[in-house]
Image (tube, rainbow over the protein chains, first blue to last red):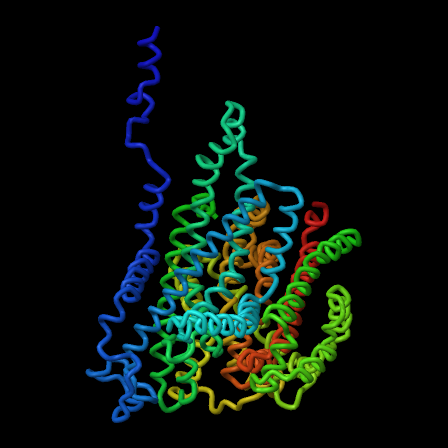
Length: 324
Length: 316
């Protein structure tokens, strides 16, 4: 009896003998076939590497002013030309990439943590906590994002400056006197505050819909504990969406930093930011278009790369959407 | 339908509460004590007790919080946001907004026209020739143009179209009405951002509609493909596109800040930028509240249109 049933359901006969295919293996295969996604990934990795090693590969000091060489076009010595203070634009663009990546890194991870925690908590607990969480998330999403970010920046900057001043007086650490560090802090804070809501709503919706699926019901029926279901089934199923969201958000967070800096409320000089470079270049766009075009095209290329990676990941990790 | 409208309006109450509440809290308490912050600005960081007390009186900070919130809401409803104590000449914030908002709305309407007039036909075309080089080039070009942020796209457009190719003769700064020739370039730059969403949604929705039974029936009756698309597909695939248009309003308002800055249009974005840069919390709060309300109103209109176009929505 035993041998019969074993051979009836043996892997060779049912065709299940092939290597088991995991979600991630499948996703990697689908993604590698997506040309735009792969190109984006190459650029994105390149950008991250530049951000990591920028201070050691820039040909000139990014803040050094050379008054003999003001507003020169691109040349062999200065690949992207020089700006109105004679600073090497190529070095400044690389440092600007570093700034944007650093902001995006911190903002993406902090919003992911807040968004996942709030979204999952609201969905799992339910009741009035869920209702209030949904109100707050919908409220935040109804603001024009950039406007709210700017608002939070304007409001928190004086407070943070005062706090840092107090800390400097009591500790006399130079760290608290560095305005660039404080600019970063303000930008991290306000972007995180504005941005977690999208992911929060996504996670909440996913958890709610997956919880009603038959396979979760089956788990419950065979007596699995809520913790087991959460760790083993909810998390892996939501994770794909979260990763897709984070990868697109990363590009947009870099863009947001540049946007705030363009408006003069993000990273300000002496810090290097692509957005501020574009703003400064706008003063003379007719005579020196390269001052706008170089940082501008760099930023556009980076955003595009992250958009393609996000699209590719979306196709690879959410196969049901792909069919549309 | 009336019940649907009432339900949608009621659903907005908590949202309105959260939005006005957070603007009030951030504006009044975000920077610590608003009166203190303003006093420090006016006295160049030399604290003056008299100025401070006067400020507290002017801002009604001696009253309980709920009463102040009520006053804030009822004043805001009448368009009264007080005066700015930071900007030069203490201008009336409500008047600044009412003077600048029409320009922004005209610019936004221009952009929406362009998004609809270009985006929907492009999306339909991409769907009709799906998975061909036409489809790929439409989606590709729009993706690239949309991904370039407005504050990069606008200067590049200026450099290429005006300075190099001289296609557009002169760029006058300012605003000469929404149908003037000068309005085209800023509106086009503004429209590019949301264009991608509209093209994509139209494309997906049209492809979806094309696979329906009644389309096959229409083809079986001998209608040409163009007639099928014009008569049956477009109207039936517009509901999802509406949702995207709703989201578009928010993006247009954010984008408008940059376009107005680059082209020197004195819209609400320019007012906001001035306020951002001078750290004028009151004006920033007022403009944020106004734009958020605009976004909410447009979302409501989209919701209601949705109910009109698709009767099933009203019942859920």
